Image 1 (cartoon, rainbow, N blue to C red):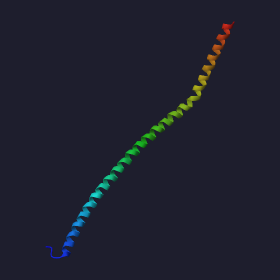
Image 2: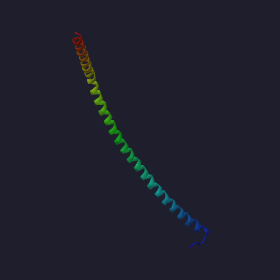
Image 3: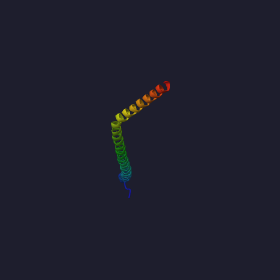
Image 4: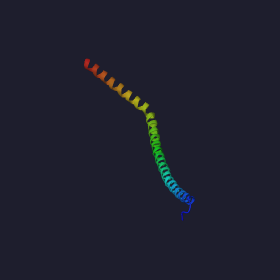
Length: 97
């Protein structure tokens, strides 16, 4: 079976190649698993970012609509304040007389 040292070299080389092949398969399996996890993570992150973008767009639209009414509200508050001031002024003038 082992007649010469050349036979030992061939057996050791074959065992080494088999071990290297097994290690490379194991390494490739874990590399593919890592890539799949990264792909799932990026897909999940993209969904979350799209959701955040939708929420921000909705908030921006609501703020824009509210900004249209701020001028009207401020004018109304100004008229109410002026009315209250005039009412106080007329009440004070009635008390003095």
